[in-house]
Length: 108
Image 1 (cartoon, rainbow, N blue to C red):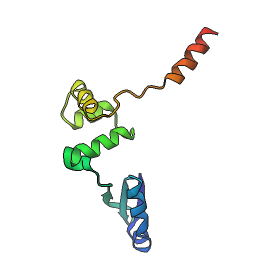
Image 2: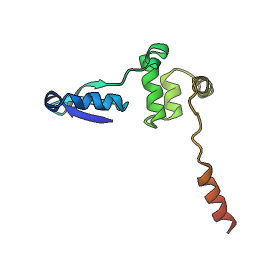
Image 3: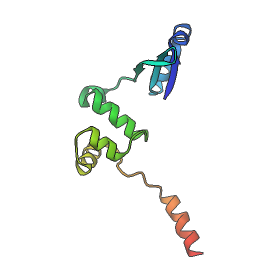
Image 4: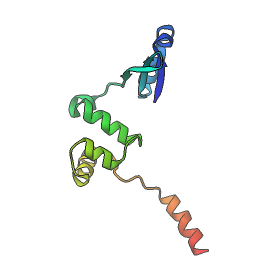
């Protein structure tokens, strides 16, 4: 997530365009107090709604946990996992190589 002051934004508005193209959230501040946020637009906002899209993006970027996502969507964890799977989002972030290295250390 990026942050930019309103004065800097006035001097260099192309920064927002660059960050939006990179799908980065940006907080806009005035005198170091947040006054707004920018998010890139995609089809998920239309199909799933702004709140849901924002929460899913936060989950995908590890800003919130599965439990926090479920609570925010007023769903059980099981319902949330099914929902995420139905829209093609991995529910489990699993690194097989890490587990293999751990197993190899254990067997030595």
